[in-house]
Image (tube, rainbow, N blue to C red; front, side, top):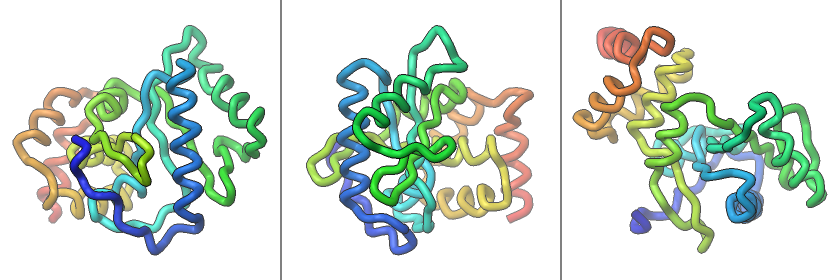
Length: 188
């Protein structure tokens, strides 16, 4: 799906577009080297792409990483960025002034969100951006007040049939996707 438009500008960002491009180039290098299997942008940048503007603090990257050691799966990524001269601050990799957070293998839902993400090019750099229905499902998992507002904003852009199938597929006792969605619809 390379036909979607480039993301609109994010008026709330604290960093420049070249920092995003630099991050995407590095992430593609990690993918080529086999350090990560695949990745997609999520969070505020995905909202901007889907034309639901939201100022954002960092670049959230959902990644699929195959590793025998789940406690150390981010170590090769941090080492790669450190060797390229980037700073690390807590869980963030700092690119220019932009913090980037890698969220690895959070759940089968997040892996599916990466696998089915929209394939786009930003300034000629191939990347993926998590789709509307997956953003809604991921927001239902966290289900904070800010997530509820995000879900409401995204709902008008969602394909309800696809969303219902996705929620039913990944709903379980732990994440409560369907009950939370019904609660949200009832409080609207």
